[in-house]
Length: 476
Image (cartoon, rainbow, N blue to C red):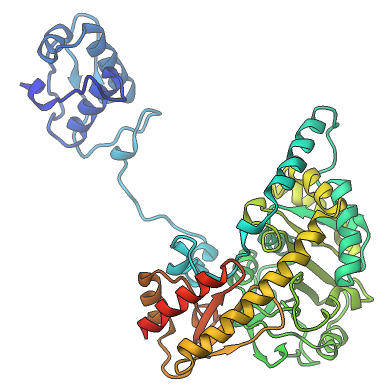
């Protein structure tokens, strides 16, 4: 009897109709009830299952709507498909879909090259790079700013996508702290720094255009530019970061992180920055300056932003709040060259790269009232001490196998392997032991030339750093 194949739970979270429909659907999909099988009458099946007749009737009607059964008044329901057939109507369920291999775009086919590594799928644990310490963020003050923004939203008229108050606050902050020269109208507020790169690529790149990126460097940049069909070329680093382009070559776009090269932390000198500007051709070669953690400098005064040295409007300046504040805020910004502001704003709307207005208003208040700068001053002291603690601990616990490159700022550092080149195998062992790092070789655009570990220090207290280092030492 069919009732012997159906088990209904009276105390379950799902109702009896949902359970019965699901059980019958699965039996048909599995081939247990083949095409042409005549089901018992609703009265009989209800009696055998100990449920109301309406429960069975409703289940039959649902399966008939999905194409599994034919059911008509006065006749018993009949199965209309074989187990290997799939209903295509709106009622089809995931269990009845036969997987097919999709045809991907050329860009999507290459995503594995820039995919998040295994270590980034793990929980947030020491010493994962790329994060500040969200536990030290003034959440009560931020919550007050959010509440105020929500209350004011009732009276606030529908305004621009890029909120004026935040643009003005950012223009002032960037001018005084980073030497950025821009009006508020040049600043665009986006969901992330990655969104800024995607927007730039969509507006500037024609398939086949050449784009230069740092190698090793930030993989998200290569992914964004490839998405628009660019031919991405990796440029090797020296002690000052990205090497200068030859005078005879003119790529469409150059992406760099001059204030704190990702991942090495190297600082590009003022002389090198000037050389890049001198050899780039206004209107033909654009430069994207990603200042992803430029707020944090420890050993000297920060070098002014490349954008502030540009007299021809060829530099895009990209920043994010996820490193300085907390990654949950999910806001980035783009300072655009004046000639491209109008086009970029139209593209921003069409691409849906729009940040929530109430978050923008709250952040404007957070900056204008001085909370942002106060938080930054405190975190600079804290992160400076944590950097030094990590460097000392690496020398004490792992000096024989790792050599740390001490960055002048930022929230992470590179520790190079003194012997062997299996940094990705090392990362696997460390993740299994509870320490999350990233292999330096995984950030190479082509064949890796550098091997080591990218270690975060900003998000972790000194006792957590010490415990992680002891664990690391046991893995070598």
